[in-house]
Length: 103
Image 1 (cartoon, rainbow, N blue to C red):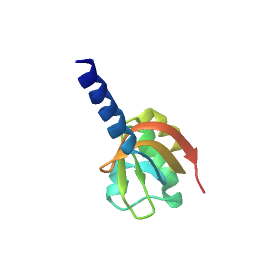
Image 2 (image 1 turned 90 degrees about the vertical axis):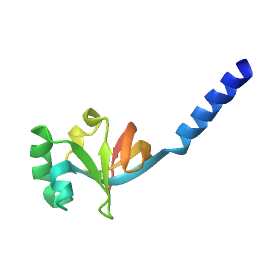
Image 3 (image 1 turned 30 degrees about the vertical axis):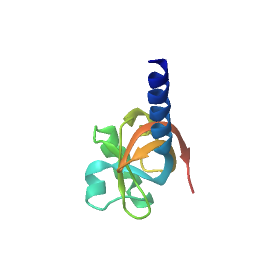
Image 4 (image 1 turned 180 degrees about the horizontal axis):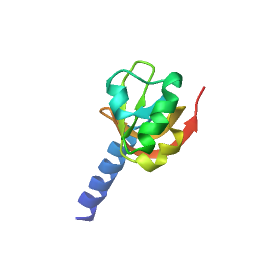
């Protein structure tokens, strides 16, 4: 029984590590991101919309939109270009380890 439990735990840990990564882009609001609005010129609107309750997302240079589970960790970066390190899979950032300013 201990052997099966150990194998199960190791499998879960290995699977979790496979999804760890980073994504770089602008933190913007979900509504505007879907309309193709993001970037440095959209910073003021992103700050206002996120501050007003709209969900924050990350939009990378290719226009891919990443949903963010831990909203409180990115709200202060609204409108800014950042690199988010954490658990990223299928267009979703489910867990954030760090958020760093990016050039």
